[in-house]
Length: 187
Image 1 (cartoon, rainbow, N blue to C red):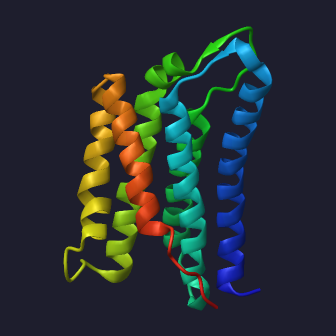
Image 2 (image 1 turned 120 degrees about the vertical axis):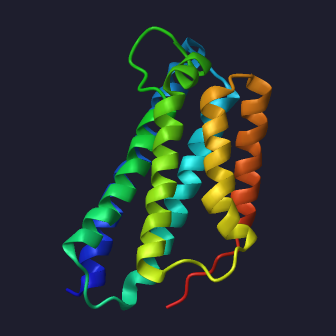
C-alpha cells in the first residue's frame, strides 16, 4: 500500500461519515412527514456542504503521485476534513421528537455550521499555501475561495433576514457549482 492509498482511505472514511450525517438526517426528516416544518435555508446549506464534500473527495485524487507525507500534513488534512464533518453534522437536525422547525434549527446552529465552513476554507487555504506557496495571480476562483466565500459565510452568521440567507445560499450553490461541475478527474 502506497502513501496515496493509505491517506486516501482515511480521507474517504471521514468524508463518508460526513455524507452519512447528511443522508441520515434527511432520511429522518422525510420520514417525519408533517411533523417537520421545512425551510429552504437548511436544505440549501446541506446541498452546499454536500457539494463541498464531493469536490474535496474528488480533489484528493490529486495526491496520488505523493510518495512521502509527514504526520503534520496528515493531521492538517484530517483537521480540514473534520471541519467539513462538523458542518455536515450541524446543517440538518437529528430528528427524534414530536416536531421540528428547520428554520429555528438553522437559526440556532448557524454559528457552528458557517463557522465550520469558514474554518475549513481557512485550513484549505493554509494547506495550499504551505504546499504550493502563494498564488502567482489572483484568479476569480482564488478570490472566491480566499475572500468571497468567507465574507458571505460571515454575513450569514450575523444577517438573519431570510430573503438574504436564501439569496446568498442560492448564489453559493450556483457559483460554486458552476466552478466545479466541469472539473475532470483523470488517471
